[in-house]
Length: 482
Image (cartoon, rainbow, N blue to C red):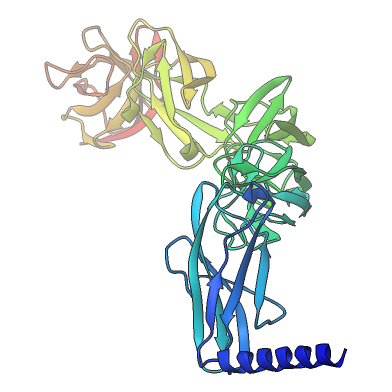
C-alpha cells in the first residue's frame, strides 16, 4: 500500500516538473476543424487548442473570421467569455453568406504577444432565413421610417432588403436584430405586407402595414370661379409623382378633372373655365391610391358673363363688350361674325373686363351674328342689329363756305350713292352727294370722302348726317363762316 502511494507521488512530481518545463515565452496554438450538423444553417462551432502554454497571462482569446485567407483582428472577431490555457470554442449563429468559403484562425493575446493559430476553411451553404417579430409603426406614410425587429438579419446592415409588397425600400439600415426602412414613394397600394430578404431568402413571416388615409381639415372657400385657387388643408396627402392625387369637380353628374399641386398637408388647384353662366352647386372630390374622398358637396360656382354694350353697330365699327367675374386676360379670346373668322389682331382687350371686335361685315349683311370663343369654347352668341352709316371723323368743325367738307365715313359702299343731309337752325334740310377723295378705297371700311357745299349756304351752325340705302347716321354739328 505504501509502495503504491509512493509511486503516485513520484508520477505527480514528474508531471508537475514537466509542465513547468513546457511553459515558454510564446504560446503555440492550433485551430481545429469547424464542426456543424451537416449544414451551416443551424450554426457552426469554432474550436482551438493551446499546445504549449506561456508564462505570460492570457488577456483575450477567440477567433478571427474572413472571406480572404489570413484573417486578422481587422476582420470579424469572435471573443470567448471564459479564458482558458487549454482549449476554447465558440458557437457561431450569425448570418453566413451562402455558397461562400470562409477562412478562420484562433488567436490568443497575452501580456506580451498576439498569437494566431493555423488557418482553417469551411464552405457555407447559408443560414436560417430572417424572422420578423414586430414592425413599428404599422400605419405608415410614404417617406416614413419603419423599425423592424427580429432575428437572422445581417448584423452589418449592408445586405438586408426590405419589401413593402413588391416595392423595395431604397434606404435600409440597422444591425443584427433591429433594422430600419423608409416606405418607398413608388408604393401604390393602401395595404400589404412587409418582408425582409437576405441573400435571396425571404423572411419566414411577414407583418401587415397600411398607408394612412387622408385627413381633410378644411377648404379655403366654398364659392369661386375660374381661375381662383382653392386650397384643401389636412394631413397625409400624397405628394410624389408616383401616386398623384386626382382632383375633380362634379356638376350635374358631369366630372371635370382638375390639375393639382400637393404637399403632405395641402392640395391646391385652380377652378377650371367651364363656360359662361354656370352657377350650380357642385362637389369637390379627390382620389388617392384608388380610394375616393369627398371634400364638399356644397361648393357654389360664381357665374361669369359677357355683356354687349350696344345692340346695334355700323359696319367697321368696334363692337364693345364687357365681362362680369371674368378677367379677360386669363383666357384666349377669338370671334366669328356671321360665321366668318375675325383676325386675332381685330379682337382687342381694353382692360381686364372690356374688349371689342370690329364689325367687318358685308354691305348686304342686315344683321351681325357675333360668336365669342373663350379658350376655344363657344361661350357667347348674339345677333347685333346693323346700324346706318357713320361719320367716323370730320377734319374740322369750322369751314369756309367755299371749301369742301372732308371726313372719314363708315358703313358705306362707295360704289353706290351716299348722301349727306344738311340741316340749318330753322330745320331746313338739303341733301348733297358724297364723293370719295380717292378713286380706290376699301369697301365697307372707313374711307375719306367730301361734299361740295351748295352756293346758297350762309354762315351759321349746321347739323349733318349721312343717308345710305335708307339708313341714317347720327347728326353731327359743324360751323360754317365766310
